Amino acid sequence: MADAEMVIQIWSPARGAALTALAQEAGWTAGEVRAGFGADAAIAVVDADSGAAAEAIIATSRAPVLLVLARDPAPATLDLFYEAGATQVAAIGDAGEGFVQALRFAERSLARPTRDRRGARSSGSRSAARWIAAQLASGGSLTVIHIALLRFDLVNIAHGRSMSTKLADAAERRIAAQVSALADEDGLVARVPGAGIIAAVAGPVERAILLAARIEEALASPLRVGDAQAAVGTRIGIAGARPGDTPAALIARAASEPPSDMAALAPASADDGEGMEALAVDIHGALSRGEVRVRFQPQATIDTNTLVGVEALARWDHPRLGWLGAQTLLAAAERAGLSLALSDHIQREVLECASAWPAALSSLRLSLNLTAADLARPNFAEAFLAYVDASGFPRGRLTLEVTETGLMANLDAAATLLAELRGAGCRVAIDDFGTGYSSLAYLKALPVDYLKIDKALAQDIVGSDRDRVVVRGAIDMARSLGIAVIAEGVETEEQRVLLAAAGCAVYQGYLYAEPLDEAALLALAEAQG
Image (cartoon, rainbow, N blue to C red; front, side):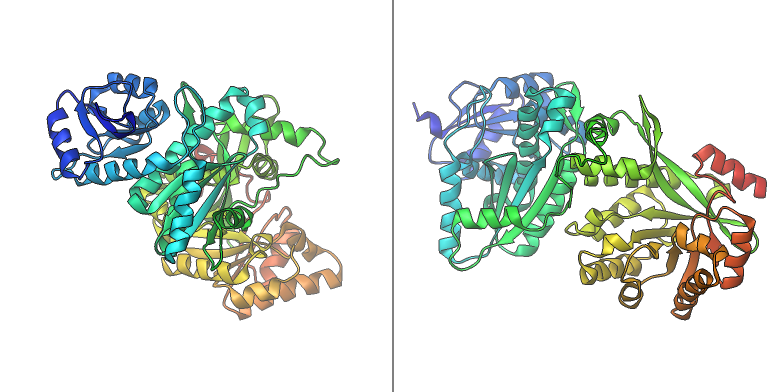
């Protein structure tokens, strides 16, 4: 009998012989390939077409690496297998190439740290370090992606302490699936001390950046643990190998690099007390329970009061506190480390809703806010445009709004990203203009179509002479650069008239309409005919 570390066992009543032959042809000569299933497998190959039986086998297996086979399974089906404990998924193509690649990845993955079904951590962390050291010694390109899983203290409060370990396992499986799909034999996944996981990738850095984006997207949706769902916050850092690096130094640098989600992890401050911390706990279930809703703030031409567009706004229908505004919602998500998950949720909700609008709304422009965390994501433009196209909403009717504070971290990178989005057909607006301190730099450096002057600045139009000079100066400056001006927070007819005279093109605010749900927005559009 072969050593237990060298056994592949295949559970596939319908295709067992064919898969055994493929495994042998793939060069598995180090050990033994068996049909059937036992307890001494190093790699367990389970056919997803076995349905519930496959899930049971996966859940009870003691093999550290599992491979589930399916032909183009639905995402919901994949989640069942991932949560049962599968680490790789391969489609059985006509030539078996997907199976062969995944099998090779599984074989290489035997060296990576894993947690078996009994909950005992293996001693493979040294193997992971040796793999990284070997890559460094070879002189080739190597990139480490550090994925920090955030605020598990809040997960413990919201779901119970045992949930943290299960969520970390589920997150690792999703990460491993992305590494398997993109990096095959050139990647490695390992746990690191604390709530962290690394993915090490050999080869071009561009591949590592794409992998980081896919990992981020894979972790943005809630993780399933049994019948429960929970979202986890993530911060992702990326570091490339440098001459003289050790594995520990490279991993440490990846963990300390500016993350893709600049979530605030400090304890609650004195001014918000325990209230925000409690909301941060609540928001873990808010996304999956459908409590985050979308409202639409109508925008009208300032001279004729004609409805021309809407800004999508998020609201939280809290079960105890009632409706909470976007500022509170975003602050709670940031405290919980769920900024990216919330942003993805809102973007998908808005695009799905707007793509199905009836004829009365079919000519409206749609404004969607992007956060600082969005702008920092690797390959964000590519992923976001894919969302837009999949929804069916026309790029040409979409305006993407960014705030001054969201641009402060890296103006050059923001300019490149916004130029890419604008070149793809979207329009770009600077939101809350007048609240920052370097507005002129933004107008000079960024590809901007619209300038939205902040509510406080817009309302200054009825203030002192000096106030009016500042407001008119901002409007004149934008118009001289070919940028249309939108006034926010207009509440009185006097404000509207003076802003129109100063050169504003569009306005929004309670004078025209409050944020509306889809039914009320449709009624407004139909009333204007």
